[in-house]
Image (cartoon, rainbow, N blue to C red):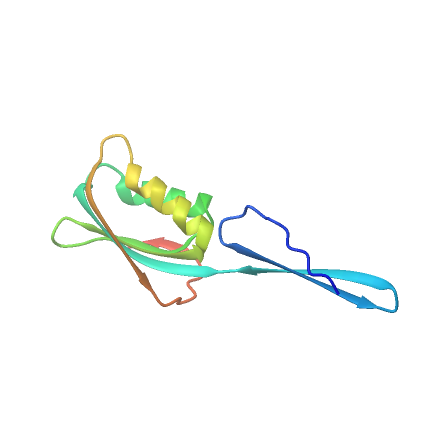
Length: 123
C-alpha cells in the first residue's frame, strides 16, 4: 500500500489523500475539511458618518460571512463575523481598507467560539 499526497492550494482546506488496495483495485478517497472560524473585531478611527457599517455588510455578503456590525458608544465599531477560514481572512483584509472617506487607526481581532449565525446584520 502506497500513500500519495497532493498539494492543494486552498486557504482553509486541508487535503488528505488515502490510497487503499483491494483485489488489485486502487481507490483514492480525498477528504477536504472546511474549517469554520468566528472573530470579534474592534475597529477604531474615523468610521461614523462615512458608510463604514454598510461597507462591512457588503463585504460580508461578497465573502459569504454571517454575523453583525454595530457602532459602539466610544466611537469604535464592533464586527462579529463567522464563516470559512479563508473567507474570513479576506473579509478582514477588506474591512481594514474601509470606504474612501473612512480612516482605520486601530484593528483588534480576537478569535471566539463558533456560534452559527444565519445572516449578516447591521445593528
